[in-house]
Image (cartoon, rainbow, N blue to C red; front, side):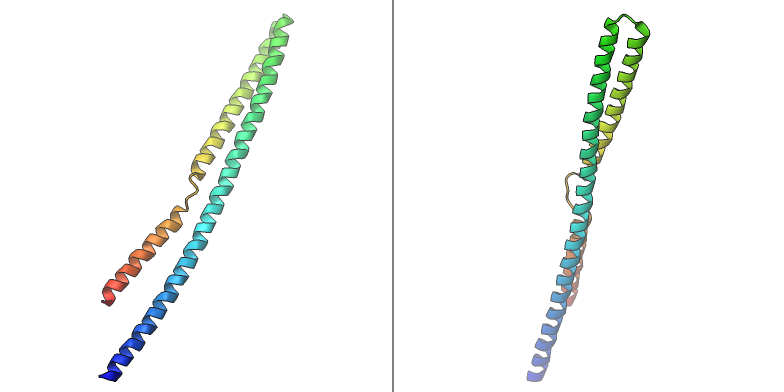
Length: 136
């Protein structure tokens, strides 16, 4: 009987050691996954911010075109100011498109929560809970 208990406790210790190693491995892999996900989201946010900056620059170009249009309108040359207004309108349209694209990229990148890694941790917890219940 003493040998049976001794072998059971030894087996239990080995099992606990194996489970501990498995849990450590899973946690390390989940942390790596979370790091990769956060890195991707930060890159996407950077692209979105860059596009918003570009939208600001394009808006400044539109301001210059509208300023030129006002100057040309004072010169009373109808085709010149009309063409300047058209160019200014095109610049505003470009600024709007780039700004909306930048906003879309930022929306995809925020909040920078690693959803895939969080799901992997939940799956691991469910698996380990199931394994512990079967072991009882």
